[in-house]
Length: 83
Image (cartoon, rainbow, N blue to C red):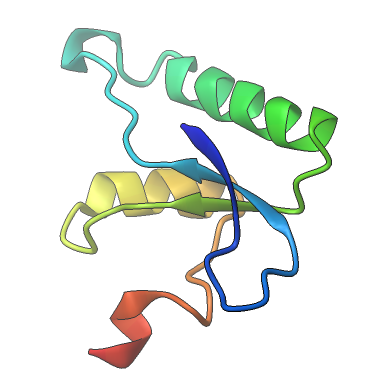
């Protein structure tokens, strides 16, 4: 992850970027990904960040379902909205 202000010309909020989470397949579906995202959310909350941005290939259906289950949605600023 990395901390950064929104990259707009006039940034309105600090953002936590989660670029990748890798959990070995043998350990998937044991709550580790949920725990890691919970830690990222806690960091963002502690640092007064109002937004978490993820990078996920739409073709990665398992990851998309994982983040959807956690309540994440595709943001209006997502590059996929402009394709």
